[in-house]
Image 1: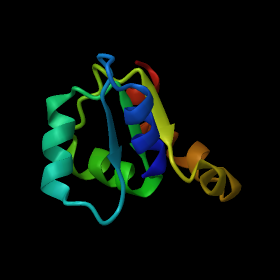
Image 2 (image 1 turned 180 degrees about the vertical axis):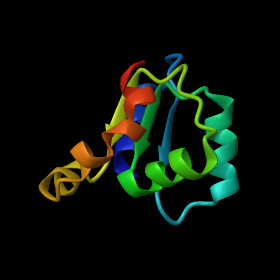
Image 3 (image 1 turned 30 degrees about the vertical axis):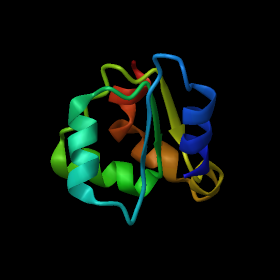
Image 4 (image 1 turned 45 degrees about the horizontal axis):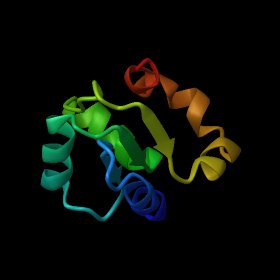
Length: 94
């Protein structure tokens, strides 16, 4: 994901870690990284993040300071966010 790549580039040399969650990645790797809870910036496509939150309930968001929803324009156009925002509340509250 370009957003995560750029965040890592701009944050190099700083104590900032970003992590991207999107379709097509290795699920066990994503779960491991999310359980570690070290990401300050979480970049995610809505479908993949909802899947991880609703099915596995393992996302640690204690260190997340910024939550970037990739493909957000399409998500809002389709009315996706308001209907499913309960899944994002733990992240949005941090």
